[in-house]
Length: 464
Image 1 (tube, rainbow, N blue to C red):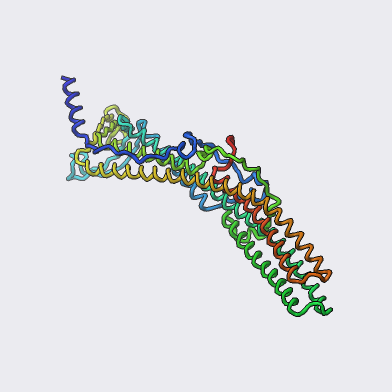
Image 2: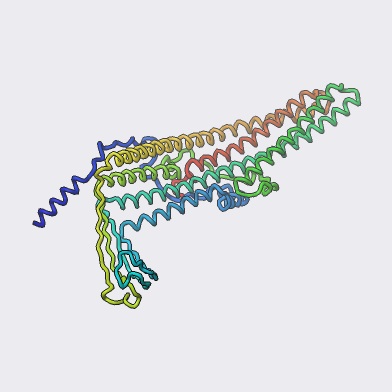
């Protein structure tokens, strides 16, 4: 008889299940080895790569930004929220206990449910009770909820690392741009002094009748051009300083005295070949992967809603009207409250919810695939740029030496009266352009190194 009842109950429960419909085939994930990545995405902490430039002022700027930047604080707050949700989800696997203590003084109505002597009189009443509620994880719903919460925690932690990496990249690139402008400021001042010397020589030659007013006007125009370039560079320096102050979460005037030099910075040489599996350490790749895992767990949770859900409750305690009777054995109350939820008439709603979760999984997979491809492109571009700039620097160094020799030769010829001013100004402009090009290439070299660091998640060594 007992076996018959068990079989009958099981059939009833199975009949109460809703059908989830046809199985969903998720979109394919980009195979990591197909784009040159290792199948194992690593989660090693991101190193402080900006310290490798060897500039303590830059390091302090990034550290200040990590503490003060509002956007970074927002991301960190999201991490704390996900950690709290994960802690809360872990409690679903164990029975939940509760305790209640209630005391009241009440006048009972003469025309209510309670008969005399309660009716029309005032009494004290009290309750001391403890209870237990447990929702067994017989379908794996709670396990999936915990896995979902942990995946979301890891994704939010990776987002925080990615946000810090991006912020450090922006600050470092701004710092390099400021150092480049500082070098250009020195070059322009040198050009200004040289133009002043040419103007002085031209004035003397005009007074001696060797040159005309045309040459004098050309020398004055050259000096004026150099002076205007000084103002342009000064403006750019102010703007970059304000940008660095904002990125580091400081007032606009906090970086007014900041004027680094490219000579203060250094980077180790970039290897000719990099292990592609280094891209697997990128925080955004890891975050996208964890969101795919979270979406997968979310589908498992939605699938459990198609089956009966059982909850077991029980309580034991004391209840009495009259506090002097509360601790008597006759005030004992005990109860069991099992409950079962049957999704008999909710199939359409549950199927719609499940399809929504399946679509979210496809979105997460598409985002992951896009992130992987973008990571490969960024690293490839940065490495190609770094190698190309190194070759450009070799060629430019030769051009710089030649332009300097040409200028010095023409200047001597001009002083000796065998070359005109136009030749001197043209050769001076070419030399100045080559000097600026050398500064630009050096700044670009540092900038490409920074972008490579960022694209590889913070380092280009196999072992952090």
